[in-house]
Image 1 (cartoon, rainbow, N blue to C red):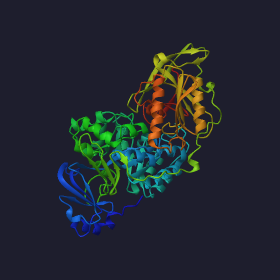
Image 2 (tube, rainbow, N blue to C red):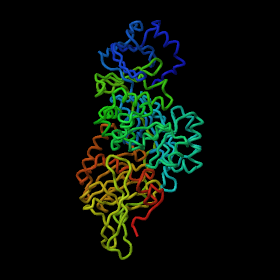
Image 3 (spheres, one colour):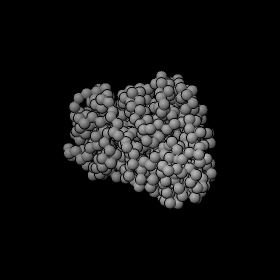
Image 4 (tube, helix red, strand yellow):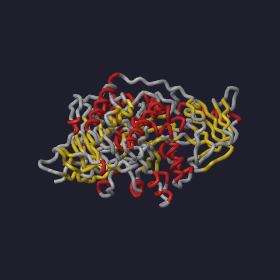
Length: 598
């Protein structure tokens, strides 16, 4: 990627273009300027661009046109700032940074704020550096937040690597690090954990933004303590009051619409009904898999959805552009169409449905009518980033047996309850039968088995429990090495034999997602890079993911984006009940609990 000079090194040239003393590289003519500063749409606007930055925005830029100036006729269409995703994880797309960008550029995304804490849990700081360096080669702005919580909950899980204050302080000196990734260990903040506070301090010392993650409904003293600890935003909100409480205390409330997280509709009422100032609300995706990116869109999808919930179009655009830029201290670089800023511009024929017809980044057209016009060469990951699945032995059905208490004919089991379209789970119970000394799943109650298989150190350890909500009603198993955040292997199924087959299959291919039914493999998405990502094109991965979703449905699953729910069942920082390699975790108390009630 050609580096754009800093504004301070271009002021004279930009002034010369604006004054007509120097020709622009390109001029967009006859546009409707969506001005996110004044919340106006200004017709008959031209934009003159030089060196990847905007030199002039106003009526009739003929004075900036020379013999070699490229003329782009907007034909009275809208000129919209390039869209920003304020919080997201590339790994959730199952593809590399390069392939993620290839998928989202045609949807108008020109800036992303990525937190690579998934690869950090597998490969540590070297893994973060890989994604940081790849991000720097992109034709759009891919800013990196340094992962803060690896592991996310110390003592409750075992990651493949760890990150601490020394690594955070080192990364703050990297050119593309924009801040600290979401501070998921929220008890560590309000309980005064030295390590967590040292990471926050290193980020603040560098003058960068601390990302938040307060996954609790409690707005009492722990919440106040967390805000005082430094996190500047939060996306883990599901109720309208959650966002209001954060904004009132100077945080930015991030409203997410991902593949499986549908939080915008509820949260947007803080603006549309309670009339809070929209400047402190930001739209984001958090987690989008490749199928969503290819088939539905990215930030354009989120903006359209927000508008459909009653938000004025220009307000929704502000929440996906200027608000994000201001939050991260990048207002003078991105988020608006204004002099000096990077020339990241969308041309669209409708402000409400937002069809993405032309995408410009750094002054170059990189997508036209859904077709990528930029060259994104494949990025090669080194050998240490593959071959990360270490099971220690061949798994067998007996590894997934759950012995019953002595002489029990039935048990009351704690069960992880999946909540459709939300990240939190419910802690529920179920009466389960005992046969030959083993507790069995019960499709009639929609209860199947869940297992976490250790995959970093080859210990062959398996934690077994139960989960409700997937609807599997035939002998089957779904296994994934994407298991936020420590990324062991999650296996969910109704057949122990299929669970063993699925686990072993992922060991063979080096990671991914696989579905078995009655001993037959129905679908596979290979993810050899850290067991999290594929180097294949997003369209190819999306096609495999579509087949995976269909296979899950063939096993009885009716959940929307069930795979995303599956992959988060080990995330021991979001209530209420989760599974880790060390046991069953009550996330409301941050403590291990027994599988069976006494």
